[in-house]
Image 1 (cartoon, rainbow, N blue to C red):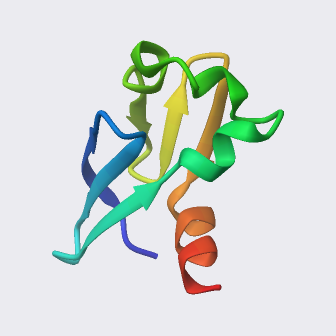
Image 2: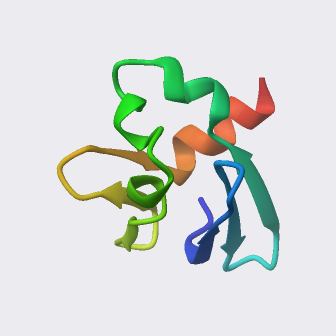
Length: 77
């Protein structure tokens, strides 16, 4: 699996994810903000405060996390 090199949050609850294989993904989180798991990210300031952990996971402190594997699986559906 590719590793996350950079990730940039956008004002519309999307994230631009740059991977080590030179691919870029724009991941739209808007539909997921209605779920229990991600509802804490509805606040834009909270949404923007993530870090990349181990090159494969976006982590929002104690709120939630999502791995690049999960993101790619969702996009491929």
